[in-house]
View 1 (cartoon, protein in one colour):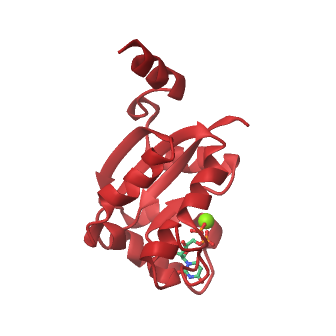
View 2 (view 1 turned 45 degrees about the horizontal axis):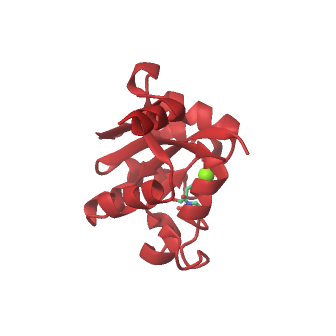
Amino acid sequence: MASQRTLILVKADAVVRGLVGELLSRFEKRGYQIIALKMLHVDEARAKRHYAEHEGKPFFAGLVEYITGSPIIALVVAGSDAIEGARATIGATNPIKATPGTIRGDYGQTIGRNLVHGSDSPASAEREISIWFEPSEIFARPNEIGAWLVDA
Ligand code: UDP
Ligand code: MG
């Protein structure tokens, strides 16, 4: 067990459908702490940087179009083994294969509109966090938030 940070995107389909609160709530209820959060319109350069590993694949152009087409929410959540844990909460990439109870298994139908992104490894998490957030926009370490709760 290690404390980790991971980059989560609430993608455009989820924002348009009014699922932001519901989806953020799932991470919070699981015990992950939101340590950075913003809503933004994504330009093509940032979209391509974020999804660089998929450049050249048949779905890449559609993926960039999807992520740049309408505002999204970016956040960093932190907690114990948060990278793998958040991906388990999100569910399999294709919602048809995602277990009911996961975000994609409960709210998704198609792979091209699968609601949420979560980093897939420690290296990806740090690379992706730096694409979406300045260090000064990341509010606190989990233990700092925990200390605040205990003292209150
Ligand atoms: N994607 C798609 N078609 C595919 C594979 C992926 O539209 O055949 C999209 C989908 O939105 C997915 C994203 O590309 O979430 C990134 O793919 P990846 O394999 O990294 O899945 P994830 O890590 O999001 O589960
Ligand atoms: Mg991925």
